[in-house]
Image 1 (spheres, rainbow, N blue to C red):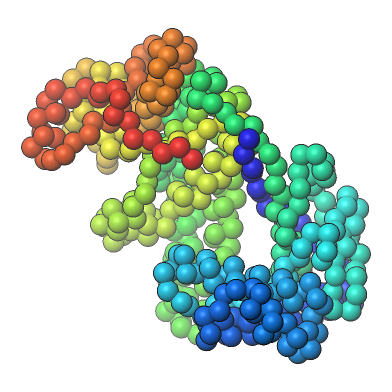
Image 2 (image 1 turned 180 degrees about the vertical axis):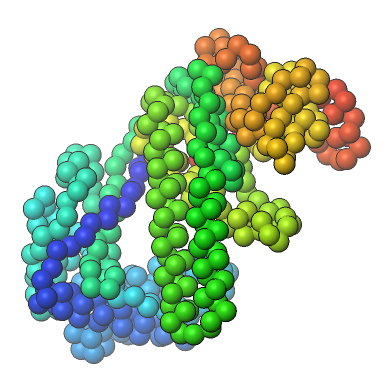
Length: 418
C-alpha cells in the first residue's frame, strides 16, 4: 500500500465584511512569517522548540495571532528554509510576499459539504464555497484532509487542501497493458500501446500561442516601465496556468483511455536542459522552457490513482532504432521532415511514433526482466515488435562498430521506477 496526495482547490464565497476580516488575518500571518524569517536568517535557528520559546509571545502580542496561528507560523518558516537549503545548498533570506494562512485540520479549519469554517483574528467564520468535484473527498474511509493554505488573489480567496488516500501497490506481474509515450514539441505526446494503437497529441497550436506570449513579453520589455514589468509578470503566470491545464488534459486523456494496471514507459529526460541549450537561438526558448517534467508528474500521480505503474528508461537511440528489425543508424531519421525510414528493412513512419514504439518495446523488456516470464510478455506484445533495450556503449569506436551490426540486446535496460 502507498499513499497518494493531491491538492484540491476551492474558491471561498465571502461578502465585504468577511473579505476584510480574512484579508487582515492573512496579512498578519504573512507579516509574522517575514518577522520569523528575518530572525531565522540572522540566527540560523531551525528548531521549533527554541523558536517557540524565543518568539511565541512576540507573535501573540505584536501581530495578534491565536495560539495555533503562532505555531503554524513557526512551522511554515522552518519548512520554507529547509526547502531552500535542500535545493540551493545555501542560506537565502526567505520572503513571503502574498498574504497567506496555513490552516491545521480540525483546529484552524473544518470542511463539510455545505460550509467552510475557519479561525480568524476576531473569531470563527462559517463560509460557503464552490464545491465542484469535492463530493468524493468527504468519504473519511478513503480520504483525509491535511494542513491547507488559504491564499488571497486580488479580492478573491482560495483554499488549497491536500487530500491523501491509500492506493494498492501494483506488481509488475499484474501488468495487463503497456504504453510507450514519446514527448516532444510538434507533438506534446505520442503513445503506442499493446493493441498497436498510436495516439498523437498535436502541439503546433501550443507552440504558436507560446510564440505570441514571447513576442508580447519582448515588446513590453522594450518599454521598460513599471506597468510593463507588472504586465510581464502577469503574462508569465497566465502562461504557466494555461500550460499546466494543457498537461492536465493530456495526462488525463492518456490514463483514461487505458485500463487499470497499465505500464507507462517514458524517456528519462534528466539533464535535457543542458542539451537543449545548445540548439539555435531562435528555437532555444521553446526547447528550454517546455514543461516535460510537469507532464511527467501529472501522468505519474494519475497513473498511480488508476493502479498503474510509470517507469523512465534510457532515451538513447529510441528515435534511431528501427522497431521492426532493430537496426540503429542516425541516417534512419530525418529531423527536418520528422520522418523515419530504416535503411536496413525500409520500414517508414513518423519519427515520434518510432520513439513511442521503441519505448513500448523497452517496457516489454522491463516486464520480461522483472518477471522472467516470456508467456506474459507475449500476451502483452504486438507480434511485429519484440522486446528490445538500448545498447550500452562505452566509446565512439565501439559505437561505430555496434552500428554496423546493430540489434538492440535484451537485459541492458536502465529503468527508474517511480
